[in-house]
Structure formats: C-alpha cells, structure tokens
Length: 98
Length: 482
View (cartoon, each protein chain N blue to C red):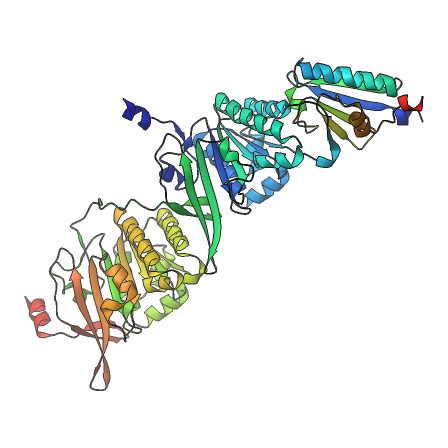
C-alpha cells in the first residue's frame, strides 16, 4: 500500500540557472505539501552528464520526469503553475482536503 | 583581392553525384543548409547520403538527429542503398539520436528552453568528432511543443550555435503551401536552400532539384533532374554546353569496308557522332551492328542502347545477316542495355546513360533508335537531351552512333528527330527503300560528313545472309581498282 504512493521523480537541469533553481524550489514545495515524504527527487545536471539526456528523451530544460508510478509523465518548464504540475503528476492535493 | 576571397569560399563536398558540380563544390562549409521538399521526395535519404559519403569518402564523422524515424527504421530504409548504418555506428563514425516527443505525456508550465536538445546534439558531435550534422525534420518540434515563440527563438539560437560549432549541417523541412517550408525555416537558415521536387508529367515521374539560394557563391539556377536508385541519389548537371572538346585525326571504320570507301579518308573520325536515318526496314540496325562489331574487333568497349529489341533478340537477328555479336557479349567487350523508352522520363534515360558510361567507360556508344525517345518528351526536350548526350559523348571522346526512324510519308527535312539531331551530328547517312522493277531496292546516301569529302551519289545495296553488299557502281569500281 505504502509502495503505491511512492513517487520517484527526476529533475533534469543544465547548470544552476535561475529557472532550474525555481523549478527545484517549486517541486520540493509541492511534494512537501502533498506527498507527505513519500517521494524521491533525483537531480540530473546534463552539463555534467550529457549522455543521460537521450534515455529519457529530454529536449527542454528544466524537465521533470515522473518515473514511478508508471506511465512516465513529463512536465517541462519552471513548474510555476502548481495546479498544472499536480494534474500532470496525478497528485491529489492534500491541501484541499482541509 | 575580393575575387580571391570569393574563389576561396570554403565548401564541403556533398557526396551526392553531380550536386558538387551544380553547387560549385558543395554545401557551405561549417554552415547550415536547408533541404526542403514535399513528402516522399527523398529528403531523409539526401541527409543520410550526405553523412554516409562524408564518412566513406572524406572521413568526416556525422551525427543524424532524427525527429521522425527511429534508428532501426532508418537502418532498414537505407540498407537497400548499400549503407550499413550499424557498422558506421559501431566504428564510431556515425551517431543517430532519435528525438521522440510524445505530446500526450508532456505538460508545460512556466518558462523553459531547449537546452536539452543542444546538450544532446553537442554530446553526440563531441563524442565522435563529427564534422557533419543532419537534422531531419526539425519542424516536427512544432507538433510537440505548444509555445512556438520559445521554439522559434530557440531554433534561431540552434542554427547560430551550429555555425559557431563549425559543423556543416543539413536541415530538412517539409514543403509548405506558399512557403518553402511549413514553419518558414528558410527565414532562419539563409546560407543555402535547396528545393527537392517530385512531380508526374504525362504519367512519368520525375524528380528535380533546384538551388533556391546560395549566399556568397555562384550556383546553377536551373532545375536539375535527379535519380534515386541502388546507389542513392545522383543529380544530373546540365552539362556545360561549351564546344571545347579535343578532336582526333584518327580514322575508324564504319564496320563495312565498302561503306568506308565512300568517305575520302576511309572512315569516320574517331570521337565523331554519326546519324543514320531511314524509315522502317531500311537496315538501320544492321548498319549499326556492323559498327558495333568493328568497334569490338578494335577492342574498344562498346555500349549498345536498344530501345526496341532485347539483347537476345538483337544478337539473334544480327546472326541472320552474318554478324556474330555473342562472343563480344560474353567477353564483356559489348554491353547491350535494353529498356523501354516510356519506362522513365528523358532525363532519367540520360542519367542512366551517364552512369553506364561512367561504369563501363565505353569507347563507342550506339543508341538505336534515338527517335523512340520522342514518345516520352516534346521535341524541345528531346533536342535538349540530345545536345546534352552528344556533349557528354564528345567530351569523353566517345564514338557515337545514332539511328533514327523517319516516316516515309514525311519529307526528311520535316521529320522531328532528324530536325533535332541532324545539325548536331558530324556525319549523316540516310537510308531509303526504292521501288525498282517491282522489287525493293535499298539505297543509302551520305548527306554530310564534317571535315571530310564524301561520295555524294545514291548507293544501292542488298542484304543477304552474308550481310550488306554495296552494288558496285562505276565510280566505286574505279575507286577499288586504284
């Protein structure tokens, strides 16, 4: 049961650009608010590991990839629109239950 | 100084037969070139050949970034053209990166750029030291990305980046309704634009290529026909119509000793073009075969283009008049190429001839009959093609022998092919059937022979199983005796 709720996310960035920093800040915030610790975020800097871009079909920066649960979903951009991100990742917002 | 700079405009050979001639050396080196055309016109193949030939002939590794086909599909598609992608990849000469953008699994929120694409391309280029890059078809991105403003500015950045990187790039684009490409890529890539076209004229498919633009360089402005066959793409340049070929004083035989004697020097000049006209059944093919035979006997490689008979049929029929071509066919001294005129357009015939000449390097070429080509083109086109053909043969110092079918009812001067060819040919012989005492009398007459005196009267001849025999008239007898 707990496993089902586990989210595995990957954030692809290319150096510490303002957009990448914003994206990371945003996704960390949403996860803390709605996933209650049941998640992992892996940050991949393509400037350091360019060979990793092909595998996940990355073309835009920043890109957030939901690896688990399947199917894979991708969100590109600085993730500034919370609702879109939550819908995109299929996360039920806990905040609204309050 | 300025002139010198222009001359030194650096170019990269395209690896596509004939295209380097048209572009004066190839694509602009280290810059992007846009290749556009409608679906199925050969864009992907064009790009693939650019890379494959770049590797095999110029040792320039290449990156193929595909936005449409997967690596496996690409490998399958070009296998038939003798390009082994897997080997090139294994040898670290080629990288294929398939960029797949699935609209349904992507959400967009906030600002982004396409740095990921740059990183992938950069990584692919650097990993093998690529000098050539193909982006096929980058416009697919417009289908996968919502924010086209970002996309456009990123594309502009990409092309600038490629230039800075110094790689010679081919970018393909789908042809739009009113613009060259659907998304107006020509705005961004302004150094060199090539348009591929595929059209059907009178049920015959022709592919054509045109250079729309080539900044900083002169280029041919015509439409050039191109062919896709088992060797890939080849472009047929409209040959330089200059009269600069070298001439020979050497005399070669017509293949018939009695006919040789009608010419003051006892035959044709080597490398001349010869036209034989006559209505049906006037022994055009037989005379052509005599020429073929003598050419083979001289150990000159001979190419016989037959538009009416298959090789076996020709050999069998000539056997009946005592001309045995089969040993030469076996020893590969003679190559007979039979094809239906309506199989392809005129240019394709010319292109195939081009390739055959390149491959076989014949000393003698026979086209029998050239008038068949009239069925596939208008008189203007046929003439145009013949000029190019004769030019090609002349510059290579090849003996050319054309036969042409004329209609008995029309005057020779009014006949279309005769009109088209006669002024181009160096020697012109007409053949006629004359009614003579209720029998058919065959006769021939030399109309012209450039640079050589000739017998001007009508010569009668007969054909038996021993071949052609000229009836000895008085003049000929004295000639023989002297």
